Image 1 (spheres, rainbow, N blue to C red):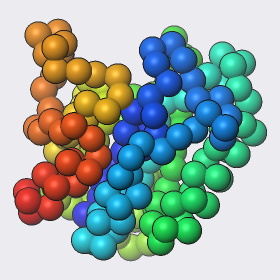
Image 2 (tube, rainbow, N blue to C red; image 1 turned 90 degrees about the horizontal axis):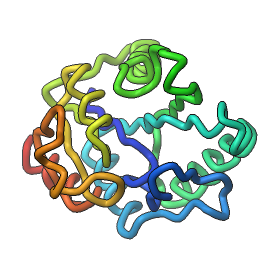
Image 3 (cartoon, rainbow, N blue to C red; image 1 turned 60 degrees about the vertical axis):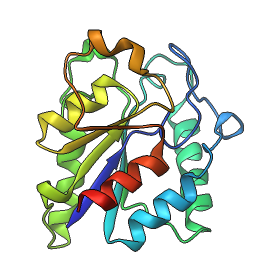
Length: 186
């Protein structure tokens, strides 16, 4: 099974800024061209999983219920455009918790892969990607042996290249351009 793992903030919706959080549905705004990009992935046989750190819950900035409502509304709106998201996995732990699910750890990817196995499906690593807007996302994908695409629609920018710990396989301006790369890379 071909899979694309996506970070959320800065990839699907507008990046709230460093040390800021999307705390409610009213603060969640899809980036331009996200729905057609996701639809193209679905139409080309890719399962889509969203993998995101959301420590704002543990910090008390917003509640688990707030996060659930954001997710519910996001999935409802994507579903109304016939976009299927196979799963959404969040790490709500603090960085100092040293959990196995906080990116760049791969615990959330493992959960998604277990869900696929439960359906009798296995991930095809050579045809699967992690797309994110931070070097942490790229580390996560690399730690699991996936191809990686860094998008410049959120946190990271090319001017920081000299400080990157790891380098993505590809870079793109946003998700639509990343999907173009995936479809050409096949």
